[in-house]
Amino acid sequence: MKIVVTGAAGFIGSGVASLLRDAGHEVRGFDLRGGEDVTQGDVRDEDAVARALDGADAVVHQAAKVGLGVDVSDLPEYVSVNGLGTAVLLAAMARHGVSRLVLASSMVIYGEGVYDCAEHGRRRPGPRAEEDLAAGRFEPVCPRCGRPLAPGTVDEDVPPDPRNAYATSKLAQEHLAANWARETGGVAVALRYHNVYGPGMPRDTPYSGVAAIFRSALEAGRAPLVFEDGGQRRDFVHVGDVAAANLAALGALESAPPGRLRAYNVASGEPHSIGDLADALSAARGGPAPEVTGRYRLGDVRHIVASPDRAAADLGFRARIRFADGMREFAHAPLATAG
Ligand code: UD1
Image (cartoon, rainbow, N blue to C red):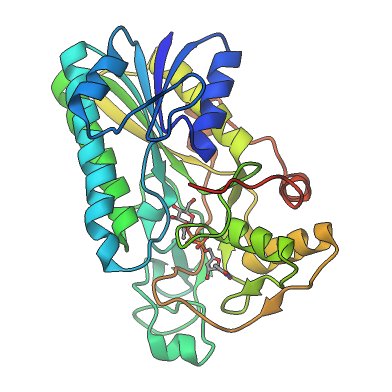
């Protein structure tokens, strides 16, 4: 197939583009930063997008402004790059008769994970109170009885609860793609990436995730600073597995029912705590040892642990790189300078 990969010069997009090429596809890269096999352009630029789409069979849309951002001054940029950029791309796809889309989405759209209360069943707690965090009470409690909750596994039908501009813009992308699919009879798959890590990850910036922050600290000889008590859990998925998920999604589009978008978690299925992450990276580099600080960020959620089952059943995708192996490699892998 002739495939346009937006964001093809980035951390994830470059891995996706090279895997698609290895699989025999003709890949046209499109990114703010040009490069080998990558046309320089902005997804909000209608003319540049139209030129890139000419003759294409499918689009794999990885270009986005990512991360948590600095503060609300980032709001317009998230809406512009992620919202408007996707809208321009979808409109151009409709005009050029390109009917297949794989969209990079994110687990951030879920907000807090799912939990069970022994008495009140499934619960989705709201943001944690600052007084609880300040007192070191990090686990969310049942909104009805205040008792401890047991964290469960997020599947794709959990209602979204986006809590920051990035999450809101990612959810908007999914909705726009679903609208496009319905109106045009196109097929779309949204891949909800969990915490992606691996070689070429951008180093420490206000937009970086925790794996890059810890890795950058260790490289500079500083201890990874673990927030809360380190018990908060995430699913770290290797960038090579994320590329494989994109290839699997493209394959699945061939036989997917037209007119709709299906969403899938892209996760390792092997959740770990942030304390485990810091320990693994620090051990692989021979120190310094992590420091558990008790500090907290008000916007953070406690646990997000995903079910990878739907992606396995429908796309035939299962992550292959185990946490211990991936982190040993990541501890010494090169980082990139920009996102
Ligand atoms: C992250 C991304 C989010 C992305 C998602 C899925 C950022 C900032 N967040 O969400 O955009 O969509 O993964 O890939 O890019 N922590 C520390 N020490 C630090 C920094 C963070 O202990 O120095 C802790 C945080 O308190 C949090 C956890 O690590 O509990 C994860 O933080 P982070 O990677 O920033 O954000 P996510 O919520 O996982």
